[in-house]
Image 1 (cartoon, rainbow, N blue to C red):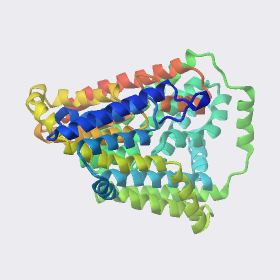
Image 2: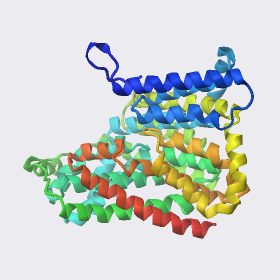
Image 3: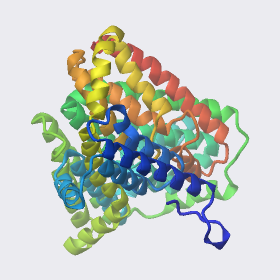
Image 4: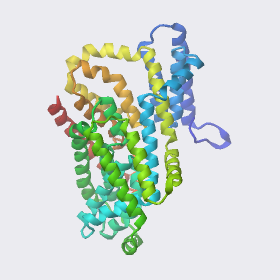
Length: 469
């Protein structure tokens, strides 16, 4: 199930463990199917399998397929009803979110192909100024915040800005580990604040909040804490690391400064910002739901592509190319809805609710919200933070109403459990990706940065829950 194999085509150790886990769960599913009746807590076997396979490094889509197979066996769902369930899933909330993410990736590729993203970064850096290390740091972090928030992808957004800002940072003496910390903190904040990023779209849909309400109660406070902590941690890391950029990196900044501006990219950037901002403001004004993002992505991509000279066909092809990179994520979301529906048929969610509804009132809403955030610390599913929000909302959403938890407070809790997995407490793919983009090899400093942001956000959650409850 993993892509790595040993010589001779034999399975490596992780593959053997993955296959063994799958076989054991299939056997358990057959036993439970034969026994009949509600499976109770045993109905969580497919969810546990899904998490274990993902943690073992199995492709997250293959892990989901394995979990769906086990859930179908447990519920005695034949191939034809399972196919009907998959067809129904195409119109589900989860699948629509997957489609929004696909279109967002397409929009990002259009912005990159037209030069809009690069022009936007240069504009931000130029407006803030490049005369002091502090101004450059602000420029790097604001650029990351804007691009990641607009495009909805941490790795993709920072990959666009890295070649532009690294020479400038190198010229002012910034070191790779500090720049990596800037990328990570500012990009994480961008994912929390952007109106159409995957976490924001998913959380507003799950908590039934408008973007404006989400931004006021969850996005702005948590994003501000993340950004501020990352700002000061980058300065601390700068003083405690020895790694340097090469002299040629600083020299490249002078060459870039003398390069003629790209008029086509400037037009595309203007169209991108004006259309996206106008549609976002309109969406906040009319309190549009998550599905409004579909219109925003399509219209903004069309305006950006046409303004950037791609033409109708070229714009469409750029959207296809960008979306193709995340087709795996759409597959994940398409399969996730049947998985949750089948697990629900086992009675697992009902059993959990029945056991918790008598316990949670004694715990109280405040501790309940903190416990949900804690799940993000100890039970993150690699590469599927948004799917994790869907799962947690499915598991604990019914308790929100019974405990009298305000939807704004629930949104804060979901934001914590969605974003905590990219910051730590152990090395993550997102963390390593930002190190690679910044050309840093100091994992220790990246962990310090992630831990500091986690601690600061935890303190912020304690305050926010006290205010919102």
